[in-house]
Every structure is written in structure tokens, then in C-alpha cells.
Amino acid sequence: MIYTITFNPSLDYIMHVDCFEEGETNRSKQEEIYPGGKGFNVSTILSRLNLETTALGFVAGFTGEEIVKELKERGFTCDLCQLESGLSRINVKMKGAKETEINGSGPDIPQEKLDELFKKLDHLKENDTLVLAGSIPSSLPDDIYEQIMKKLDQQGIKIIVDATNDLLKKVLPYHPFLIKPNHRELEELFNVKIENKEDLIHYARKLQEQGAINVLVSLGKDGAILVSEDTHVYYCAGAKGKLLNSVGSGDSMVAGFIAGYLKDKKYDEALKLGSACGGATAFSEDLAEASMIQEVYKQFKGKIKMIVKGKCKNTLASTVIKVDEDVTILRQGCIQEEEIREVLKWKLQWHVTMEVLD
Image (cartoon, rainbow, N blue to C red; front, side, top):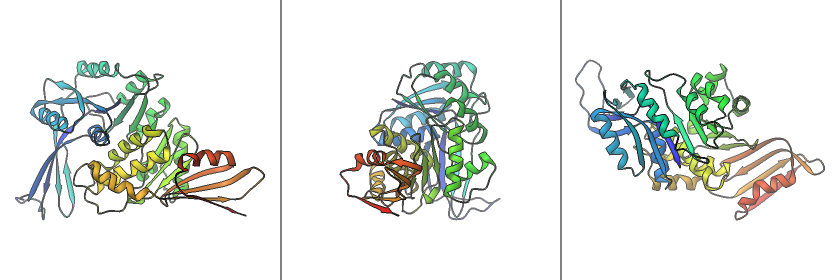
């Protein structure tokens, strides 16, 4: 089972305006209401990929009731803690020539409700997956991610953390299965300017040294880089399409990565499906439907081309493997020829070419 936690969910009220004028009465030409929250977004995409998922978190008041109603229509299980006072927040998003957001603060979460959430976490078992994503409400302790990871430590549960800055740094000692900083967030974590992919890989590996198992760096329209636990580095070019939506693309990428990995435990498949889900949401008005995901995923299908530079006895050095024209596996240092065959054996149904360059 895949669980997600949304600590501070919202109703996202989206208004489309032709021209917003500050200080004047503005009228929208179209409105939509969606349940908002990074964990909910992940669960939604997982459900559309036909995976079982349970959403955990907190809701309050009539806005909370509407959130639950909307989520149930998406077809996955909700096991949310109902707060006795306050209102789940409403986030107003205006879309016009520019996007403007006003986000609510959300209700206070008392200790007894936090204890209730922790009791729900007791039901998680070995091989389950838990996604922790988003900011922490001011009424919760700022080490809540650490508390949860410490509670579940050594239980064989894969924990994925999509957070930034100190919130991310503090969970690294608990060895999250996946973290997903973007280019800018990676710069902020190390207070550096990252100029190229080599720098990205260098600092992603530093996060691994600090405890992360897999590091997925989102590059927006330029794709994504994955530094995986098997010491490989995978690059996937960005999907091609018309940008319609800037909300939920990263959450969709996380969901796709999970789905791709659980399918056959292959990191290139995880990266491809994650990239397809992220792109599909970016090309949709809301979170991507399964049909859009399948359409974008087709962009990453094709043949494998493998280029090997250098040779010494039975080892091949400085290996670069290009997959589907869009996915690249980089391996530093020397690599046994048998290891390359191992990488490729699950792709034998595709045409493979190898070129050895002196």
C-alpha cells in the first residue's frame, strides 16, 4: 500500500481573469474548485495509474467536508483526521497574464489529533510506501517529519520526502528512499551556483552521502536527473507539449516515479514514467488523466543506443548509455562488461547497438 500525508490541505479556488487591476473590481470569466495538497496530488495520480493508495491528513469544517467529497470522487481511500474546530483553508489562485495566489493559513491541529495520526501510522507494514510532502502548519512541531521517520525507522517502509531547505536536511539521517529537490532548491541547500549537469550530479551525490538513497533533481522543461542507489546517474529530457498548468507537476512526477519503480524495480522506468506524469500534468488544466499520461509516455519509447569510450582488458571506462534518445545512464569510473550486459538485459526486446571508441 502507498500512503500519503497532507498536513494542511486546501480547497483551491481557481479564477481565470482577462486582466487583473489592483484596487478595482475584477470579474472572472471561469472558475474551478479542486482539493489541494501535495499528498492528495500524489494519491490522485497513483489512483489514475491503477495503484492502491490511502490519503492521510487533517480536515476541518465545511471546507474539509468538501475536500473529502471531492477526493472520494477520485476513487482512492481517504483516512483523514477530522478536526473539531476551525476550517480547512481556501487557496485563491488567479490565472491571467500572470498567476497570483493567496493561500489561507489553515486550522490549528491539537496534540490529540496528531496522536490519532500516529496511531494510523501503526498500520503501515514492511514494503509499504509513505510520501511526506509539503510544508508543516505552524500548529505542528517543526520536526514532525523527523518524528514520523524515526517512528517508522527499521521497519522496511520506503519513505519519500518532497520538502525543501532545513526540512529536507533534517530527514537525511533517516535515509529517505527518495528526495526531489529542483535545480534552484539544490543551489539553496549548498549555497552555490550550479552551472551544468556535472555540478548537479556532484551535489546530488553529496545528498546521498548525507543519507538519501535516491536523489531526483527536477529541471523543469529541461527534464530531470536521477542519482540512484545503484551508483548510476540517469538523465531524462523534458516532455514536449503546451504548458497549461504550473501546479502539481512535481507531485505527479513523484507519483509516476513510485509507480514506475514498483512495476519492476528499474530506475530508468521510474524516471521515464515520473517524467511522463509530470509533463502530462503540465500540459493539462488540472492533474493529468491516465490517457494524457499514456500519450506523453510515448515520447520516451524507442531504441537503445550505447556508446562506450575507452577500453582496458575486461573493463570499459567512462560509460555512457543512451536510452530512447531521451534517457541517459552515466556511470563514473571503470565498469565490468558483464555489468553493462546486466543493465541491458531487461531491454533485450529493443534493438541495441554498441560502439567502442578508442
